[in-house]
Image 1 (cartoon, helix red, strand yellow):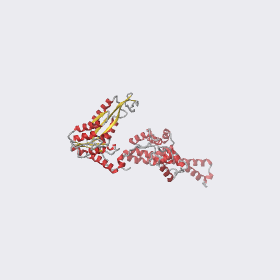
Image 2 (cartoon, helix red, strand yellow; image 1 turned 135 degrees about the vertical axis):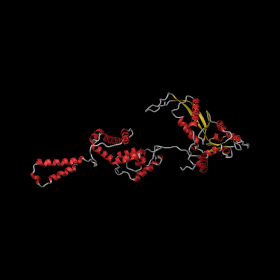
Image 3 (spheres, helix red, strand yellow; image 1 turned 180 degrees about the vertical axis):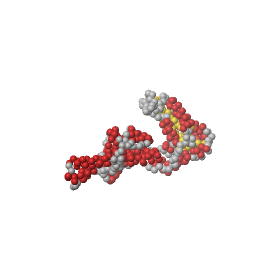
Image 4 (cartoon, helix red, strand yellow; image 1 turned 120 degrees about the vertical axis):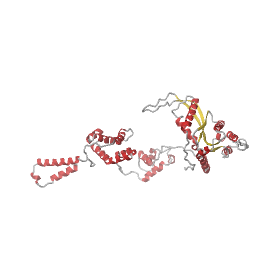
Length: 464
């Protein structure tokens, strides 16, 4: 508008006709009328060319609800909250001047976001009808800043690549006595190595975020000894376990039960020193962190792979060879004339003399078993394991590779037990109370929750 006024002044003073004969008052009146006409035309449009007529924005209830959540949200960016308030105020009042006063922003800012909203109003209505699940995202995009390229980067791609490469190496290899990098140490090392003259810690953090490098996090993992020594044998054992799981339903129909067996040791009977505060509206449950120890117990469990039920669980203070053989005997006693395939790890008690003698007796094998540590089947772990894996036996064992407890399905069930019962909320006044609670949970699980796991792993050798 200021350019238009200046142009009007130029045209007025450049006239070479009768203007010179008129008095100053007439010339001023004409000039004022010209400026008023320019001002009236300007009032019809805002800075973006939108009609400034004071009319309320027509917004649906769903969109208004989304805007209110943005305007009042605790975890919403400040600029989004402010712009959502502007649109809401425009939908209620309509007068741009009043909106600028209520929201405490300038009138051009109100007009800018009014124009932006009107530009996208038709598209928002379409999304509301056809893609309601995308409505919140669409509103957020409208209220966000338009793309701006920003200033040119201070660092070229070679420098950035050097910093990223540095973050992928160990700090010790560059003489930094730390176990992991931090953005600060990376920035300092980059300057020391003359990669850059100067760089902020936050800028280094941005580069790491862009390619999803998290130098502050780590995950533990364990190499399988069998995988290192003999990858082919490792793959064979893994496939054998997976095939056993996949055939479990067919074998169950044939009267052969597939059991996943293992022990959960050191289950603590912890009692909270003071009672917990129950959950209430807007307040979570609060548990006392101080506790009293009452001892531990061990659970030996077998899970029927086809049905998901826990069969004959044993709760005892020990997990000796005798205890394990007794558990296997209890499980087999559930259906004594039928076949059993036990999936378990290669723990010493799982390849014991007592287990060999028990299975030989149940399968009516009259061959000489030899003597432990001296001769025959009982000579060592390897000979005993070979006997226990014999597929001709009615009761046999399929061993998982070493350090591969993730292949044993009962370990997944132990996780369920831990999350549902043996968590930080639980409080047990004695070991007996703990045992009873575990027995009650197993009974409840078998009746209401038990089902076969959907096993998708095929036994393919994992790549490092």
